[in-house]
Length: 377
Ligand SMILES: [Zn+2]
Ligand SMILES: [Zn+2]
Image (cartoon, rainbow, N blue to C red):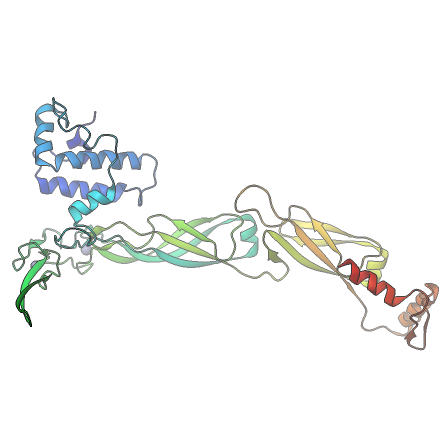
């Protein structure tokens, strides 16, 4: 069993204040909300356990004399044991809680807020994922006072007015006569202590604004609106409170060639009328490099060729969507005399009764074909 004094890094004759200070510093560094390194959670538990024993004079006395917090008669068994110990409990215990419960002084220490920033990426980066450098500006723990809010070498002083309770009693005249009410102390703003010499760098807030560059991993498959959570990278709290989280919200820029529908991509490929009739092969620049798209002889406008697995990577699970290539047959808009002659000759050969600019609806049945097509949809 490890020594509780060693765990907290204090001497055996450390004062209660020193123990509290040491714990507070370690807890801030190791708290699972802030520190995701392997082993940090266990270390945090050990540190919290050590504090729980050494901060209680009775438990500390037993620990000092027996080397065992349960004492020889196991009198304290079950108090801590295997039940775990909520951080919020101990946090509230010595930071004063977030206003709930007791009437003690308010805490200067608050968890920092979550921060949100938007990051714009290209569609290709959404398909494959990318590492993205981002500039973030958040509050960080003040490096000068380390979150204590006090100019180095000074410390908070118990408030003279409320004597550390954070509350003052006031007598108020009302229709019922003289009534006593309790209000937060105006001198210390209810904190119970005043800071006689606030840290010059952070003006006594315990945190300062800082700009930094982070490289974040944007996973493949993200879409506009996807949020990536970075634990403990948000705003530092006041007076050394833990940092909030940072959320990075993704915006995917529109792509000139490809549109996205779920994890499928769509592109339109225009082929000349003659190529559509005769068949051809077209090279298409996909996100995976050049791919040959076969245009079968007799291709109709609106036909779709699917290139399997060339879409967006699935954010969850394996595999990728498909790339749908929509073929659009381009009818010539300008033909010269020779081309017109050839087209007329072609119409003739195909038995299309095309004469004097009118197409007969008899025979092959233009309307019938149209009806068939509509029926297919
Ligand atoms: Zn400071
Ligand atoms: Zn006060």
